[in-house]
Image (tube, rainbow, N blue to C red; front, side):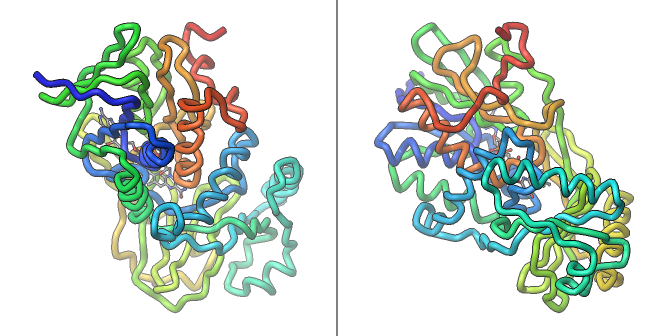
Length: 372
Ligand SMILES: Cc1cc2nc3c(=O)[nH]c(=O)nc-3n(C[C@H](O)[C@H](O)[C@H](O)COP(=O)(O)OP(=O)(O)OC[C@H]3O[C@@H](n4cnc5c(N)ncnc54)[C@H](O)[C@@H]3O)c2cc1C
């Protein structure tokens, strides 16, 4: 059986994996990206489309800031803007306790140079007269926005291929080994060998890590999503709430995309589907925020599968068991915005042995027995 040699093997063509392939190929490094299905076919292609920095765990903000700079250069990098729109992200409070959380996050934002301003009740209802009376405060991150998840990863993949990366679809990695020098990977009858291995397999990154004696407590996360028929365009910002039980955004064509609650999924197949009762509950929460959504017809609902870590932040960084294995998975429902930046960071870990973003909080060692 023939074996193909390359320098870097990447498992999983979501946002992280395709961006890594692009950044490596741009620096002239031979790399092969193996994807079980189609590029962007899992979480990176079916998510809500929020390109949000506000509300992130402080440890994620340096990556989010780094990634945002790449989002702004998408046309140059990937030949499309993926419908990325800087609409602002408005996070809403419905109780005094929620308002206190918004106020507390201002300090976090300031520490990471994230522009954020509190909007009090009166100003909020003047600026956004379509908000319901239960909303008592908001915080606006003017740099944040949204994009079309269907467009990002295929565009990154096209750019990566143009730069020289090899991307194999319908290539489910079934065998993984490291002989002390090289990784050996098989997908069906096909085999590859490489000095480096990047684990960007999303939820299934846990399976890849476990193959190298680094089992982690990653769980499937399946946010419940829906979209309405097109209605008059009036909701400019991407809307969230403290606690995250509902979020919504409107695209200029008029459709309103709404998330809230959880669907059901089986990552072993894999499949995912929305749950009707969660869809109804999210619609009720959405109409409490924006009463004029009452009566808007939902034309489609869906879900997807991401990997959720117990502390809700991903695993990013070198393996503790295996040299030249680097993980980036378990983005816990908020890795779409991070994807472009994570790929750049992975390429730097391979080529420069370091990156300027602090990765200690994402160390896989926080879960594995071999933690220092
Ligand atoms: C419904 C939903 C809504 C979301 N909304 C948002 C949002 O608004 N904003 C935000 O920032 N984030 C959001 N997220 C989270 C975000 O989509 C994910 O965190 C991010 O896309 C994960 O990217 P990834 O590259 O790690 O994984 P994925 O996109 O899942 O890519 C991993 C790839 O690895 C492949 N793979 C797995 N195993 C193998 C194997 N053995 N061999 C070959 N290939 C393999 C998979 O097929 C998959 O294509 C949402 C997620 C979901 C599901």
